[in-house]
Structures are given as structure tokens and as C-alpha cells.
Amino acid sequence: MTTRSTLRILVSGASIAGPVLAYWLTRHGFSVTVVERAPTPRRTGGHAVDLFRPAMTISEKMGVLPRIEERATGTSRMTLHQESARRPVRVDLSKIFRAASDRHIEVMRDDLSEIYYDAARDDVEYLFNDSITALSPDGEVRFENAPPRRFDLVVGADGLHSNVRRLVFGDESRFSTFIGAYLGVLTLPNVSALDNELLIHVGVGRTAGMYGARHLGDARALFLFRSEHALDYHHHDVPRQKELLRDAFDGLHPDVDDWLDELDRTPAFYFDSITQLRMDTWSQGRVTLVGDAGYCPGPAVGGSTSLAVVGAYVLAGELARAAGDHEHAFPAYEHAMAPHIRGTHAAALSATKTLIPTSRLGVRGLAQGARLISALPAGPSRTLLRLTTKSARLYNSMTIDDYPPSQGRDSSATDPGGAPGPE
Image 1 (spheres, rainbow, N blue to C red):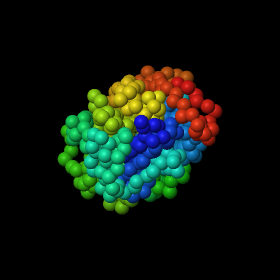
Image 2 (image 1 turned 45 degrees about the horizontal axis):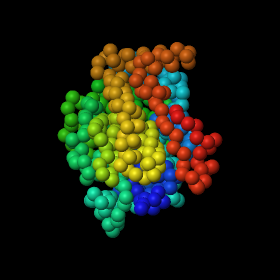
Image 3 (image 1 turned 120 degrees about the horizontal axis):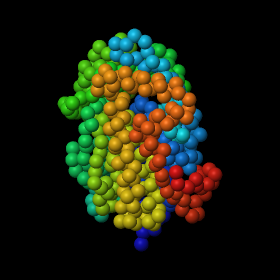
Image 4 (image 1 turned 45 degrees about the vertical axis):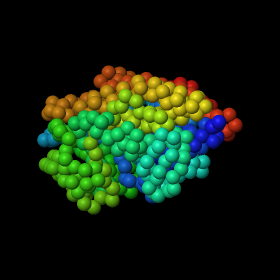
């Protein structure tokens, strides 16, 4: 009979959900291997992501919250330029963040991935520069480079374009829903010497921003734009993606033109559709999915990072609660996550409409709404934001169970102050 200590679990993906899942699985007494296509822990120049209250609580239980706080971007001000408007709107972002959620932090995705990886790297086997090529129902796994091995369970934590999902559930097109927008991110020199400030330009159907961070020697430019139909490109065709980005933002503002001039020199570039993953179930046999691989609400608009952290924590906890019996754990995991996923999917659709206005009236509304919220006292601004945004209400109401680590493990360094109980 397989016990917790001998139950072998393979996790595909070492970005956010994968390392968090690996941490909690080992704390619950399981044996974990993580396979990652990249040759080393990922440092791709990713953009800033948000951790909301439940994800911060989980990070605190992992003992890594101080490191995350040290790496916070510190963005506290926004200068917003409306297309064709003379004067910018200046906004106190720190007040908006406090009004949106009573516990929130913004951190660079690469920094967060590294912190989560370090948390359990000594307890987890990592197979870098490798990928799964075949999965059999009895748990045999074939790899591109490593010899075949047998695992009791396999988890796909490999993102929106999940390889595990493709192998087990079929082509991505069966589950992906394009929500009418695209996202681009590039790394560029911080020529504007931005410190704790977000510079943003908003036009009808397109929004571009640039920001630095306290510990970055460079800056990030982020581009969001609408498209009524899916654009024709391959997700590995970087020159075509850069061409599409230039076309979408042509003539918005000289600042944006300068940022786009860095496209041919940038050391890191990301481009993808803002797509939701909608699956009736994300478990089949010995395989399940976590994070964007199973239920991506939409990059940059849906709080997918916090959802991935919560999903990884819940999956590990339900496996522990069921003593490794996946036939009980997987349905319990899906049941626990379903309301959170429905909420984030709805919030992402609402956020897309706000962040990428469809009319000049929407552009003015975004600017004036941000200025009003930042100008009001804390109490009224919090009330206004909660009334007008689904995401704030969602994350403030999200609850998670407590899954204590297995008996016999020293959790004193990983669970400061004891378990806080449900959020």
C-alpha cells in the first residue's frame, strides 16, 4: 500500500503554482519531483503581479512574506495621460490599493517565482531543461531527456499553454476563450528615472504604461489593447508579435513611441492574448491541473497569480486530508476552488472593460474615477471602490481552509504564529 512518504508526485512547471504546490506537498509528507522546460529557474523579465489577502496569508505561512515585502515594487503614484488631453491626472495609488484590499502587495513575477522556488528547493527534486512527452494511465511518464519513470500522480502547473493539459485533455482551443484583448510586456532602460511611479497613456481600445521598481536597474513597459477578433500569429513568432504591438499603438503618444523603439533591443519580451481557460473539470485519472493551466482568468486582468497560489495550497491540502487518495482529493479540490474561479473569471471581464476603455467617455471615466478615489478620505474611497469593482469584493471575501502540515514535520520555521484559520 502506498503511504504519504512513498507517494510520488510529479509537478510540471516551476513558475508560481509549481513551487508553491511543491512546498506544501513536501510539508504534508509527499515525495515531489518538479520538471521544468527552462534550463534554470525562470528569469524572463516578467511584469509586476498582485498578491491579495489569501495569497499573502499562504505566503506568510510559508515563511517567505518578509522576502516578498522586501521585493515589493513600491509603486505608489500614477501619472495618467488621456489621449489628446493637455493635462495628466495624478493619482495616489497607495490609497487605491488600501481601498481595494486590506492586504495587498505588488511584486515582480520573476522575484516571486524565485522566492517560492527557494522555499523548498532542498526538499524537492528538480528536473530542469526537460519536459513531459507522454503520460500513461498507470502513471508512467516519458520525458524529452530523462529516462521514463513512474509516478503516482501528475500535476500540470505549466501555465496557459499547458503541455500536460494538451496531453491529457486535448487541444487548447477546446477550453480557451478569447476575451477580446492582448497583452505585451518588454524590459527597457529606466530612462525616465521612474521611482515608485507608474506612467500611463490611455486611448480608446489601448492602454500603455511604464514603471520601475525600487530594486530594478531597468523598467517595464506594459501594453494592453483590444481586438474584435483573434490575431493571426504563432505564440513562438516573436517578430510577428512585435509587429502587431507596433501597429496597435501607432500614434498614441511620443512616450509610447519611444518605448516601442526598444522592441528590437529588449532583453525580455512577452506577448499573448488575454484568454480565459474554462473547463468543466480539470482532473482526469491520476492527473490534475493547477493555476493558469486549469483555470486562467486572463493574464494581467484577473488576479491569476493569487488564484494560482490559492489553488496550489488547496490542492496540496486536500491531498493531505485524503491521505493521498486522489479519487477523493481531486473532487474536493475542484469543489473548493470552483466559486473562486467563477468569481475571478467574472472580475477579469469587468477589469478588461475598465483598463482598456472602448470609448472616449470610458477613457475620461477611468481617469476621473481614479482621481476621485485617490482624493477621497480612506473610508469613502474604500466604499466607492468596492461598489464599482468586482475584484475588490472578490478578494476581500475569498476564504480558504486551514490544512496543518503532517505530524512529525518541524513547521516552526514555516508557520509563524501558528495557523491563522480560515481567511
